[in-house]
Image (cartoon, rainbow, N blue to C red; front, side, top):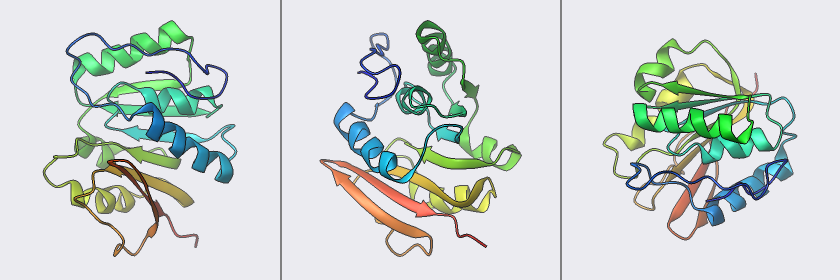
Length: 180
């Protein structure tokens, strides 16, 4: 797995054998960031990456100039890996938070320009994640919440649904926080 763009373009991220995460493929991540490149100036963005896994999405945002990226990961070992990779790559604007996403959301006091979530596709209650994130009050008006999921879910009926992009088996659903 590699960083697709920005100052760290081409740098490898190599989790240890038997790593317990399903990373977003390079192909899907590149497509996602092509969309975001056309809609955002990354410099200074405050980003939240939920279900951090390998940290690849967080590192991609950081490489492209995000001001700060918080990466929430429930597995202690995975959170430790994300911290060590950030250090190895010289990334100082990523903070790995060892926490359960559903415990983190109600106590979070930051506000974000973009929130990305890549939960396990078979996670029980995955269909409730958009509501939980969007009701937490942590996304700036006009900001995107992006949910990566499999094809068994559809969110087109959600009031804040903006668009869905599909890359193979990977679906990215975009929700937009209304401006006041």
